[in-house]
Length: 222
Picture 1 (spheres, helix red, strand yellow):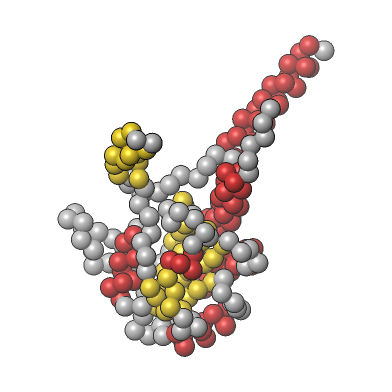
Picture 2 (cartoon, rainbow, N blue to C red; picture 1 turned 120 degrees about the vertical axis):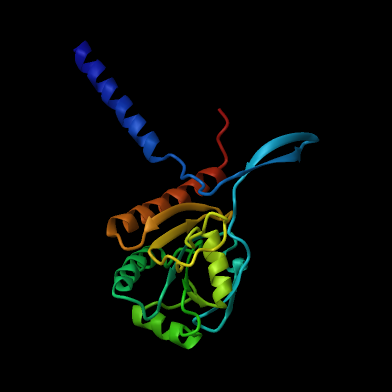
């Protein structure tokens, strides 16, 4: 009987440990900077992680889209070609899974940047969104100047660099989904061509929502 009780306790401990691992916070991606800040009159050193900077692009509805559209929201970003290779079809199917799962959620958005702005005009993007069955202001398909697209791509780590830190000659990579939190930090990067990786993205979005829910819930006094 004692052995049975020990075994039950052991199983409960393992279950608790596994649950703890599953609820581990998502990492913040990018190289942090160590800066000195004044906190309550004292100089303290803190790690500051890179954030996605402000931007201005034009959407499929010919609307100017900026970071303000994503204030207080979790969002998924990617880069695409409206008339790209066949692999793009799988990428669109995977992003549609994210769209279908969260399209009614107020605090989640998607932004897809065209890497062919010369051809992907707002009219073309509108037609593209319609072909996918995308409506409303949940999923933005955006276009802009080529250099601006590359600059934001560098911040999302989807533009290659040479040894001197300059943009490499290769194009923006279109096979990644990126998860951005409310503070504009990158919290995950996923293979946009993979169904399994897309499922992981959906799970991580839910985990990030729980993370914000937990931090906003006041702790009970004992």
